Length: 601
Image 1 (tube, rainbow, N blue to C red):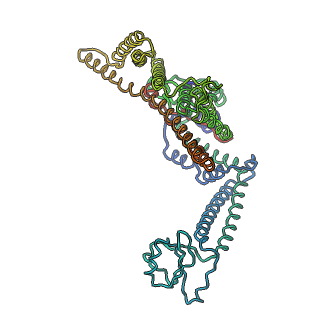
Image 2 (image 1 turned 30 degrees about the vertical axis):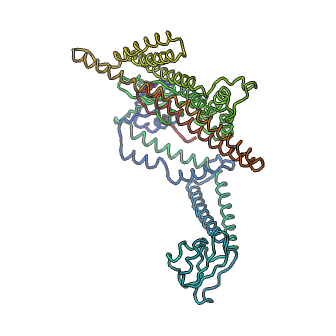
Image 3 (image 1 turned 180 degrees about the vertical axis):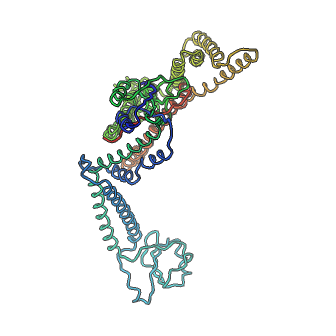
C-alpha cells in the first residue's frame, strides 16, 4: 500500500458547455475539486437537497431488514414519492403496534397474579370502585389504618393481594406501595387483545419485508438526488470568466490519459502541475484487499499527510501481532475466526468490510499460532510429553523473558517509525534526528540486555553505550533547523538540542507502554485458569449437581474472559499503533481524497 501521486488539474472550457463538462467529470469520478469561487446561494441549495430526509429515512428503514425479497431492477416500475410515503407509513404503524403490544404485555404481567375475573358495572354497586394493591406480608400491618372496606383475596409466600372498595382512589400515602394498574379488562380479554396485536404486527412486518424489493430503485433515486446536489455544488465552485470557465482539482497521476480524452471530446484546455511546497493535497491511499484492513483501521483515527507515508501495511501486521499476544489463547482465537466466518456475508457487502474481514482472519490465525506456542487452550496447558506440548515454547510465567520480549517488540516498532520518518525526509538534514532516536532506542535496549545478561555483557554495554551516545548527538544537532549566524543563534541552537533530547523521557514511557502486551496476555490466561479451577472445585464438592453448576461457571466465565480479551486486544493493540507509533512515525495529519463521483448506476 502507498499514497498515490496526485497532480493539480486546471481545466478551462466553454461556458456554454459547462454543465456537460461537469457531468462528464462526475461520471469519470477521479477528481477532488478545489473551489475557485463560492456562490453561497447555490451551495446552500445543494447542501439542502443533498440528503432528502424522507427518502434517507425510508431507505434506512428497509435496509435494516435481514430477510429481503428479490430486488426489482427497473427504476421506472414505481413512483418513488408514493413508495417513500408507503414505507414511512409502514414504519409509523409498526412503531404504534409495537407500543400497543408492549403496553398489553405490561398490563398482562400486572393482571396475571390476580387471576381470571370480571369487574361489575359500577352502576350496580352504587358507583363504588375496586382498587388493587400488591402488599408485602411484612407491611400488612399498614392495613389497620385503612378506613375503607377492604378484602384480602389471596396470599402467597411474599405478598398479600388486597382490594379496597372506594368511590375515589385512596390517598397515595395511605399504603407504602403503589396500586396495581390492572385496567378494566379481564385476563382472558387482555390475552385476546395481545394475540390480535401480535397478528397485526406480523402483517406489518411482512409488508415491510415485501417492500424490500424496492430498495434498489429507492437507493438509485436517492443517489440521483445526491448527484444533482454535488453537481450544483461543483458548479458553484467554478471560476466564471464570461465565455469560458475554469475548474480546478486534484487527480491521480495515472488518470491523466482519461482526463485528456475528455478534454479532446469537449474541446477543453488543461494544465497539469505537480504539487508545490506550500500545497496541501488530499491523501489518496492505494490499498489492497488482502492487507488493506490496516489502513481501514487507521482511518478511524487519522489520515496520513500526503507527503508522509502510509503505515497501513505495518499496522496490519503489528496490530495482528499485538492482538494475538493479548488474546494469548489458541481456542479463543479460533472462536473469533469462526465468528468472523459466520458473518462473512455482511463483511463482503463492501470493499472496506472485505479488508477488515481479511484482517480479522489473519488476526485469528496469528492468535492461534501464538496460543499454540504459549500452550494455552481455554487456559489449559498441554502435557509436556504430548504432541501439542512439543510446540509449547513460550512460558508466560517467565516474567523476565516476557518483559524483554515486550520491550524488544516495542523498540523495533518505534525504530521502524523513526526509520520511515527519516526516509521521507531523506533530502533534508533533519532526517538524521529520527535516525538518532532509532539508534538511541536500540542502544538503550542493548545496554539493558547487557546488564540483565540477555546478551554478552561486553557487547550490550559497549555497543549499546556507543549507539546511545551517537544517537543522542544526532538528536541534539539535527532536531533544529535554526540557522547559526551569531553566538546567540548558537546558544539557541544548543538549547533546541537540549530540549529535543529531553524527549528521552517520552521515548522511555512509550517503550514501557508495550509491557501491556505481556501484562494483558498474562491476565487473560490467569483468569481462564481461575474459572477452570473454580469449576473443578464445584464438581469435586458436589459430584452430581456440581456438574451443572461447574459447567455454568465454565461457560459464563470463558464467555466473559473471551469478551474482555477481544476488547483489550482491539483497544490496546490499536492504542500502541495510533498513539505510540504515530507519535514517532507521522508528524502531520492529512485529509482524505473525496472524488467528485457519480453515485447513481
